[in-house]
Image 1: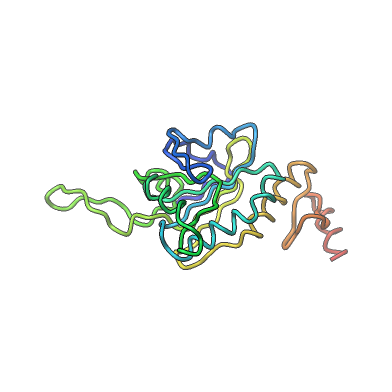
Image 2: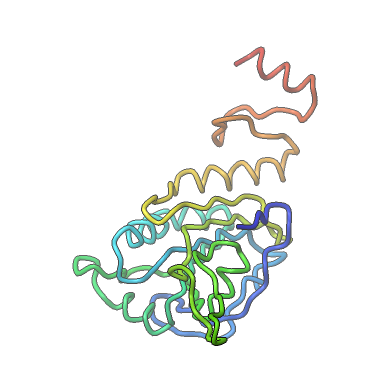
Length: 210
């Protein structure tokens, strides 16, 4: 498992389903460099149970991300056809119809591997056959990428543990506050609260008030 914080997000080009129906080739996060922050998250599999709760939670908060200039992009190791089929199924039938942000198809599993969230690995047996050691699907990884393409925040959850979308928004606010004001954000900071200067004096002043 690699830590990508402070490093450039791995570049890729892959098929993706956008706007809930259109399959496009050569989708890449590189299109956002210099323009937008990106919230890039992985989920394990289509047609499962915890995953749609997360996908809809990000969709429900999409306006808030877009207000902040943040592009939300999802990814799993399923095929584009699988993504498309799931997107056509109504919510009350277990589908994710209504999701509009892009869902990348990491069918080669290289995107998940490069982001350090692939559960499992390839190995060779004694006869030279390629076999999978593990489920070869993505953990619930989440990466906040700034406009330069640098990863500023990441979390990785095990399969049963759904993420908190409000926390993802909080991290966006913290990053943008730092970028705009040069102030660092202390524990439990939220948008609108006092931040502090990144100095001994700044810390002392903040702690004295809190």
